[in-house]
Image (tube, rainbow over all chains, first blue to last red; front, side, top):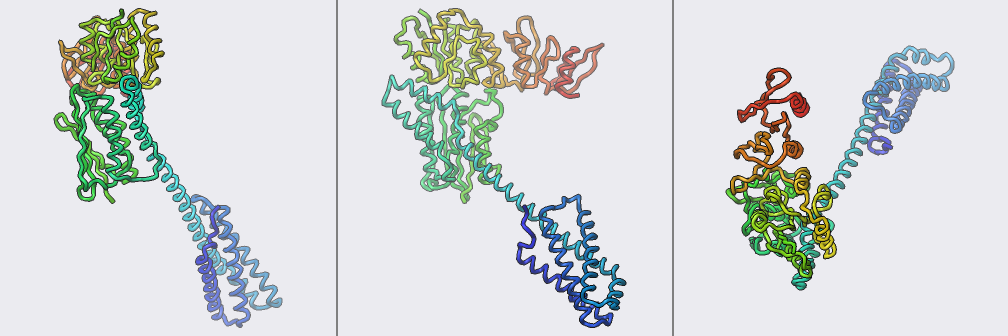
Length: 345
Length: 243
């Protein structure tokens, strides 16, 4: 249910002032006709008071029945009916205040047309105005509801995107642990710890929207340690960033999918040792992170940067920064580079 | 003694199979391979009766490796892919071991192999694998001793050649020991259309369709080749291209 337009105090005051002005206006017009003040005041006050009340009733009522856009004729018809009723009501008031055969009654009859016209203009414009106000109010409500839903959706999507984990990674890691329990229980225990810590970071609710590069790199290291146990000497990594970048902020767990991608293509594209390099640097209020991996342009896997990992990162950054250009990929000779730009606010 | 080879790119994953086999006197591991290429060579050289094969591996995956091996041995797949992804070939493999698997489950798979003791219908597995989400948009071919990977987008068309299928691509022409219907099914998702008993064409390369004799047509590819279209082939083209 919409709120009444009169619930806004300012509007109600304007509404009253409007009718006072109309009454004063009518008073001065009637004065030119040389009637006495009693007749003129009775007419001006009663006419405008009645019409004002009718308008108040109409505008107030509109919140129960708000005509749709194509039904503007409803305004016109209701205004016409109301004006007829208005003229009859004035007649009744005059019959009470003025004696039978009073000349003013005669004068009143001769001004039906002009009164009707003026009344119609006033009533229909007030109606129209309140209709606009109601529509605006409804629109505002819709917009508010929409943006609320959007916000909720966005948060849910962000959480989901953040918690995306490749089951493949999880099960292969568990398999490695299973293998280590016999050959190297100490190492198995260590790997369970690393995997748990990593999963905990992954599943954490969005209590913090941004974390420092230092913390992010700690998570990434857990992940890399696990992958190194899986792939042995084939996987080499280098992480380069200076103290200056340590406290730069970025969304949590944003690097892992990129590095996962890099490892996947690096390891599955070549048979040799693979060096994944991760570099962070600050430049003009942006944290630039580049991840490079060797790849084989002839592997026939098709164009890169279209995989799920990268598209979910793109989506996350878009939801956070409203920019689509924050992830760039490039291929140079046998190196594939993914570049992330995180604005530092 | 059953001679077996383990093909898996993760050393720890190979260790677990060896460990499970320590108490088993029926199976002997004669080789361990890091990737599909090594696996292929070892299979050809050592002729094992059984292989434990991972699916996701460097360069070529387990299915692609199997495709390249003549008379492949029985296969027990070991994979971390979820059940959904491999359910499709449940019927045709000796068994599938989902990592991490228990010793009991492993022994059950071995028992299954010893009972059937026949080489699994690998051909069927491959046909099903080609339709699964695991398969990538490429075809692996042997070019002499070299192995080539051709992205499907680089294939112009396929032509039947007796028991083989000829693949005409930007990388050259290759023969594959497959059936036309195999490629008709597996390449359908990449916009390949069987336009004739003898031709499957990459429909994205078609530039023109001309009438030819009665009831038949020809297509012109943007690579210059002209192929004949049968009556049913024309109906399929019409449907796919929407004209």
